[in-house]
Length: 498
Image (tube, rainbow, N blue to C red):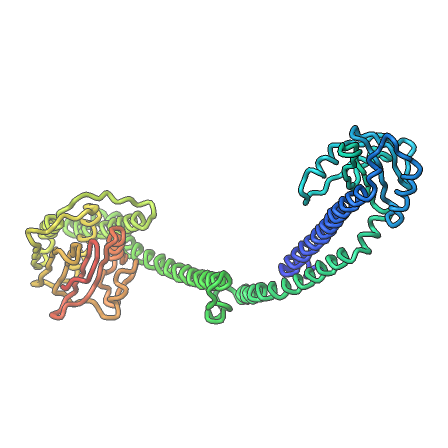
C-alpha cells in the first residue's frame, strides 16, 4: 500500500477520480435543480392556463360584493380534488382574501396577499419562475398562478392559485426521480470511464518514466565509471518531453563520466608534474649545494681559478633554479581564471625585431644567425604586448637551444586569414613525430628532451596558454628541409604555411 501511495501514477489517478466524482455530484445536483426548475415553470404555466379557464367559465367569481362563500368553497374543493396540496383564493384589487379553500391551514394565517408578484407574473411573457405569498403560511413563498376576474367590464380582483410542494421527503423525491437517477447513473458511468481512461493514459506516461528510473538505478549501481551503453537509454528518439528528458539524462551521465575521467587524468598528470618538478629542482639544487659546500670546506686550499670555477657552476645552477621558479609562477598566474589581459594596439613586426635584437648576443655566441622578416603593411593587433612578447621569447629560447652552430633561426610575422601569424622556425634536428602532438603539454619532456632539463617543460605550455587567452592558436610541425616550425595565430582563422 505504501508503494502504491508513493506512485505518481496512483496519486494522479486518485486525484482525477476524485475530481470526476466531484464533477459527477455537481452534474447530478445540476440536473436535479434544472429538472425541478423545469417542473416549476411547467406547473406555473399550467396553473395560469387553469386559472384563466376557471375565470372564463365562472364569471360570477368577479362579483365579490355578492359572493356566496360556501358555494364557492365547495366549487374550489371539487376543482382541487386532483391537487390536494394546492389552494384557491379570491382576492380583491387591494389584495384582501375574500374567499379561499386550502386543506393546509395555519393558526397564524393572513388575510392579505402581496399583489406585486401577481402583476409581475401576468405582465411578463413567460420564461421566469415567480413565487408569491401564501396567506396561510405568511413566512413561505410558493409557486402560484393567477387570473384577473371582472365584475362586468371592471376588474374586481384575482383568482389566486397556490401550488404548494407535496408533503414528500425531498431525499426520497430525489432518489425516486427518474431524471435524477438517470443523471446519477450517467455521472457514475462517466466517472468509471474517466478513471479507466486516466489509468491507460497514466500508464503510457509513467511507463517511460519507470524505464528511465530503472536506467538511473543501473547507473547508480554500476557507478559513474562503468556507465551503460548510451544507446541503451530508453526513449531517446521520442520528440516529446520524455525524449528530451532521456537525452538530457544520457548527456548528463556521459558528461559526468568524461569529467571523472578528466579528473583522473589530471590527477595522474599532477603526480607526474610533482615528480618532474622534484627532479628538475633537485638536480640544480644538489649541484649548487655541493659546489658551495666544497668552497666552504676546502677554503684556502682552493686555488683562485678553481674557486672561480666552483662559484661559476653554483651560479649557473642558481640561475636554473630562478628560471624554473619563474616559469612555474608565470604558468600558475596564466592558468588562473582571474588573469586579465591588458590589450592595446601592437605592431607585431616591431615586437619581433626587439626580440631578435635581445637574443642576438646569445645567438652570436653559439654561432647561430637570426633572421627576422615581416611586411611593411602589417596591421596592428589588439593584444597584451607583454604576454605576446613572453610567448615569442619562449619560442626563441626553444629554437636557440636546439639549433646547432652555423644554423639559422627565422622569425617572421604576416597577415593571414583575418589574423596575424607569428612564425619561429629553426634548422635544428626537428621534433620527433611521436612528440609533436604533446609538445605543448605542461611538464612534457620529449623523447629527445627537446626542452631540456632545467626548464621543467613549461616554456611551450606557456605559449599555448597565452594563445588561448587571446583566442588564438599555436601549432608545431617539422619543415620538409629539416628543423622545427612553431606558428602562433592571433587570432587563428586558418593554418599558415611555414
